[in-house]
Length: 232
Image 1 (cartoon, rainbow, N blue to C red):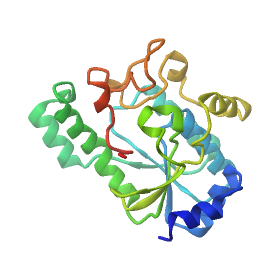
Image 2: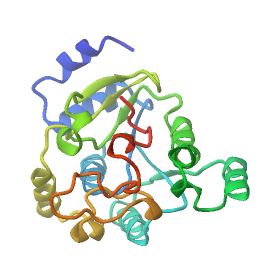
Image 3: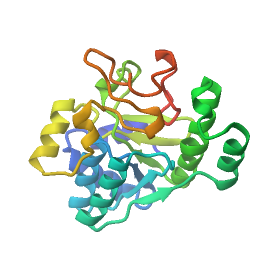
Image 4: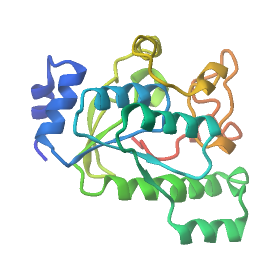
């Protein structure tokens, strides 16, 4: 992988679409986009699919998603007629955890919750990213405090690849406007106070004045509210 600064120079001045096209061309078959079917990810999926940009799109099928999420997933397949690759937890790991601790052990301790996140999300993610050099994500700068120090292009030491956040500088209003302008299907839970949508047992609506991620793992301290997918 060449120097990050060299990639930044190559992308400077390009539009969002042209940045994705450049990376898809330069890193053919080694670039991948992860979607969880939220606002941001649906916007990026539209950018990729509607412009026929050769970037593999995948999702983590944790087995605990909301019905609304499955609806968006299915409609996205119908609309664009392009594949979205699903990565599932390893059977034995999941079975051992549930057999030993039950289906709701994540409520009992931070350690148990992190174990569940690892089995359902982190380990499948490692498999999805294997062999790739660019990981495209829907991260935006204003989504949480620790992400304000991030950049749109960065080195992911844990996964040994470059992460590119094409809508990093977009505001939530920008995302909503893009969704509306392009008539993009989105998760209706967003209209019910869910800014961030993950597994159903671990996500609730956010109340007025609460932090963006207050609805994720709400029973834990604020400082512990990351699953490890985008560890910094």
